[in-house]
Image 1 (cartoon, rainbow, N blue to C red):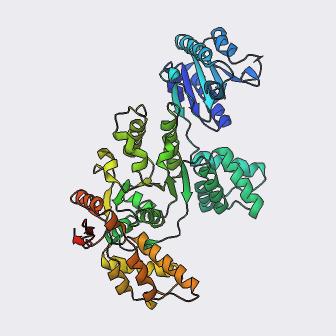
Image 2 (image 1 turned 90 degrees about the vertical axis):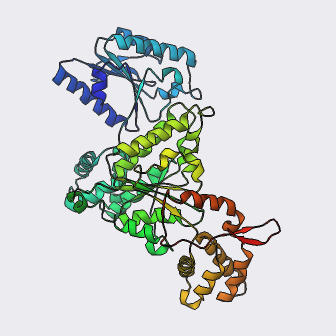
Length: 511
């Protein structure tokens, strides 16, 4: 990509990466490729605030400050490529040491000169800090994370340096898979830690370090769910649908020419197990789970929100096959329905970029979207074909509540057979799974205080005292249920009984 943009005459490129050395090596290889294939003798220069400008071969050094180096580009020969390192700090008002208007004008003049004289300025930075004045003059490129081939080369170099045998076969695949999503330096650090801790290249340790490293950016985190399908009450249809795709990422599926599943949207009443189903999805498919906090995508600088999304997508594709779970998506993407008057259209651009990535992604990333407020989601998000399926999770039926009671009782170390599950399921009509769990926990506190084990009779009073969401927000849930008819597929095998509403005088009426 970079070689074509240099040949096309792009005067300014902004390369976003933490891997400065790998990026420089790639740029150097690009210069050599231009010479070998196109006969263009490009000269490579770099600049840092500490060292000034220097030639890539180390034969020339010039002591120039941040303004002088921009003026000096006019004296550089034709086919010159100048790398500016850490320049983003000078473009950020919070860290700028030169008046920003002056720096921006000098940089714009340098870009205009470069455009007409076969020269290129590359800003090399770990973060995107691009003022609006430069937005149309500099092309932003996200430097992709290393692929399996590059990680294998990194592992081989690490083994050679430390006089270790190079893993092969399944061991090599497991180690490189564990390191996917890391930079080359992060991968080497993880290899070193595994070697120091257990004396071998342990994929489990590399995976653990990857989880810690990815969590640092605050956008995504790697989850390791312990739950299984048996941890979910109900979801009969959704479970069957998911089980048919449990080998979707296998070599057998690829040989069968089966396209990998794209993803699923899970909508419904709060507290009914949508997030739990998302976690279990990765367990069934046997791939890592990435959880994205959509609200953290948005940042103040121009282009930074879009960069955050691209970084997440790149990470997901680097780790693929994996599940990317976006919980409560309406909180992150609801702004895309606005006119853009409050955020300059940032939410709409981020949302559009996400849909484009969903449509064009080449790697097997299974996207799971969960949402409570359907009205806040843009209609494009729910269009059939964007995802493989659109499930609606309603209030649990009596049979499903019986399952949920059994699961929750067993979860807290008690034997479900010791309780009258049928009675509990009957009296908890309209309760969600999370409300059933909360009621059981309340009864545990009560019995713990009296130093005895809970019985069915201890739970019943707390069920009666709890006012479920289905009664407090009956109108909203009814609207959600009506919207789902004909638009979504039910996650459960059967429909629940009609919920109860409250009249002004406090009497219950059938919905």
